[in-house]
Length: 380
Image 1 (tube, rainbow, N blue to C red):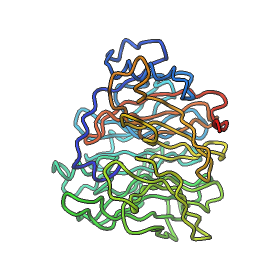
Image 2 (tube, rainbow, N blue to C red):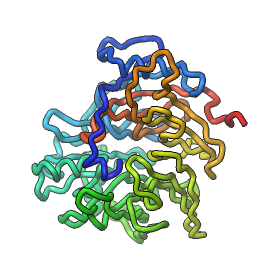
Image 3 (cartoon, rainbow, N blue to C red):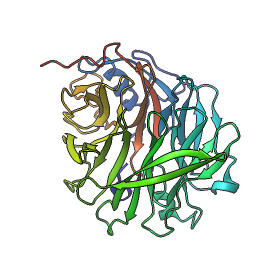
């Protein structure tokens, strides 16, 4: 999530979801709930049903074998930790709650599976000056400032630091992703702080070779990419052949809630703009590697964001969800913000995080069952 959200308060009510036509008694029947449940019946989307996984939540990652979900969530102490759950929300285990001796007591989040299923990479707030309100807020997982990348070996819970960013205000890491074969790790890294009350800071996309030596993870041959002008860059990972970077940036504009989605063909040094209608972010490749799913505010008359899909070159954009449609009978004039999401390995489900407050990064985790042929082309 963009750094400028630190100073912009978007007051959104409680957002929760359930099966289309059903209400979960554990979730309050709010106007937002009514709006989201009703949107599952929209003829403009490609959704079968929506199921709540938790009344709180955060960034998510689906394991390559389909068995587990990694997610971050704010605890009672006000800091985020990382949990592992089944796709139905059962068998919850906190993976980082007992790691304060190594990681400190700050924010821990943005988990991402290694393809082997044996490790996860994540962001952890630097121990330096933990407990200061402004610094803690900036280090929430969606912002990523004052943080480093770490790797956890899940069987032993051993943690290894992968980066060591400066302890001053220029530090930050965001959205780590492994390549499909696990041989590379990509992430966004901040190198210049934002100006007071303006801008998002300056970021670069880092790409490094990932391997183990003597039982310890090693990052090597790290290369930095700023494909356009200096600005904010959010990493979405590499293509199947590791030759294309997918990312979000604001280097072509300076508007609140307006960012573009790009691909950068590394070998050709070619930059393509894929989506530029309003707010575009949180992109991922489909398991078939034929489509890109991302969050966008495109065609939303009343604001908010939804999930869409498109071809790898940006053509054939198709709406998947329709949370913010004012023409639906269950619309309650609530702003629904779709954020980080992860597709199941078979491509049938989307585990998603809907934010309820853009400043505090609080939100709810939901499971969206997509139509069987959701990757079909749109109407011409």
